Amino acid sequence: MELQTEPLDWRDGDVPVSRRFDDPYFSLDNGLAETRYVFLTGNDLPARFRDGFHIAELGFGTGLNLLATLDLWRSSGQTGKLHFTSFEAFPMQADDMIRAQQAFPDLAPIAKELAPFWAEGARHIALSDLNFTLVDGDARETLNSMPTLADAWFLDGFSPAKNPELWESGLLAKVAEKTAPNGTAATYTAAGHVRRALDAAGLITTRVPGFGRKRHMTIARKAS
Image (cartoon, rainbow, N blue to C red; front, top):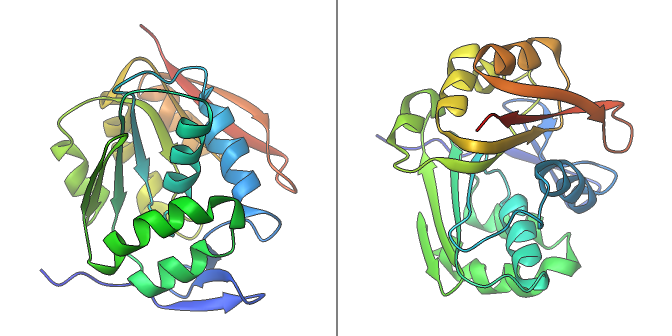
């Protein structure tokens, strides 16, 4: 199967916008701050980090969330290895991803470290503190292949109104099924149908203040 790469436009010089979904890959205000607020703080990180902690993600995009998470892992003094699995139907071209990551100078050392892997088209990266897997294809078909449960989920597809496939109740039920006891999930959206689907799947959702101009976002937890 030939993978479809994502056609892009660039806004303000360094913000990639998907032509397919007519949606930017990260906040036009401050993409790194949004990632840290929504996905890292939303999943109570770094407090929950431990050796072998497993993060799973819907929507790899530019790789920003991976870079920010590995940066937090290292800066918090965490030892051991972070496991990170991301599902992406429309992977970006390597040079586009590397260009997009240059918008975040705070992450430049990690971006430089990982850039050769992207240039080689790597789907698995093994470092002393990271075990990363990028799963190509429709998550509705590939998520079942994830062999281990996730301790935290980053639900980071494009807007539910523009990319409804990543927010279908069936897929969110699989997310819940692939979540470890006491595991969590976080997403920038507070759409009612997303929260209801997560609740129906057995996660306990909470609507909390969102980042920047977004009034609310959603966090969720699986009971033990």
